[in-house]
Length: 342
Image (cartoon, rainbow, N blue to C red; front, side, top):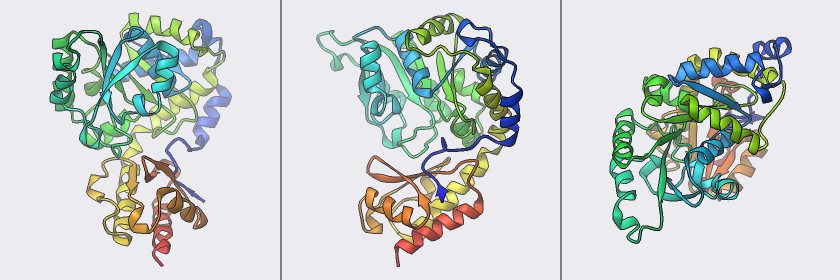
């Protein structure tokens, strides 16, 4: 089977397994694990932030940030199809009493104008609804792995500053954004108050994400992590793999992007109108199933029979290239799609 369900399905590399076996560990719940501390320091340095906090998932990092930055009963401005809203809204409501002010944007890419419109007095003439935070997603998953331009982010930052609001980035795949745009991660991070990114997606580690920001925010975030049952013990065992991922992962992401573009081109040739290959910027490919003669679930089932695993998101077939997918695998995946046309 060729597995394109997500970039979260990768297996630890031999270097990661060695690092995990040899990791120096202690109790991270009390901040004593030396490998976790090295990972947090490295991540803070990579993003240009004062401090960082290692968490088990990206959703946990996001929810810690929301609980720290947003008051109960208040709102977050975010793109309507952002992960924070589509996947995490129940978590935000349940854990922190946080709700959203969704803004629809083409391909998931917020602009300063759209954000300013969401903050206009007309959105809340009585003054009962209060926005505490603006959040962006980069890359934007449902948008098709789209990259938020740095100039747009800077404009959103100006809007946030004028409104006296913090700006947060769900940067689960920020390293993909950097690889595609050539913009250093630190430059993106400089425009936001805090951000998280995942080790377990494109970077290829088995577990973990990290929240980066000012020292006082991260100190409070550590307390919130305990509230959310996220304190762990000898987490250095998996932090060691994340350190390897931080070393090995960013430099090879362009390979995933090239594979995704080739995959998109092959499918577009087999099923004209199913997608625009030119819209594939990073490692995510969305395909309209209609030209293949079925719903997304039906097409996914037929592809499984042909030896190709995919996922279904927003009514489309979704595929992600990653470290465990070779150029040869991509050609086999294209061949599986072509067999659907027979």
